[in-house]
Image (cartoon, rainbow, N blue to C red; front, side):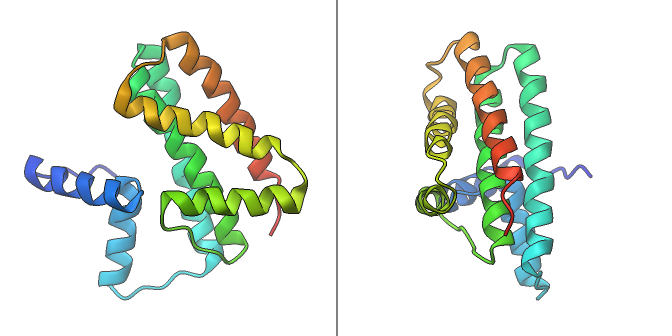
Length: 160
């Protein structure tokens, strides 16, 4: 589905999303669910997060093919953050802010004994920064994309 919004509304939505540490899609979904008084169980939320993560990964690959490191960086970060939220939702937890991603990943690292999870999250977070700073080369973003894909695969295997 494609939704066309007036520029001013899109800008407000983008600002609100950034304040909340969410993607625009997440903000729209959560707002609609709240407004329509629809509640989803954790598995339904996990399914939404998982689908968005995969969508963002595909979009990131398209941006990389075009050489757009800024947009690819943000989509890769979004794919990683949403996969973390997928795992959290499967465990009945909700992540609402950027810092909560780090706290959840720390607990996941303790639970699994896999410290590489935090290292890979650092790589994904550097891509989030690159969206704002535009300081990484195409090669650096491509290497980071490989690390994000590793993070996504690892997170996909974690059961609730």
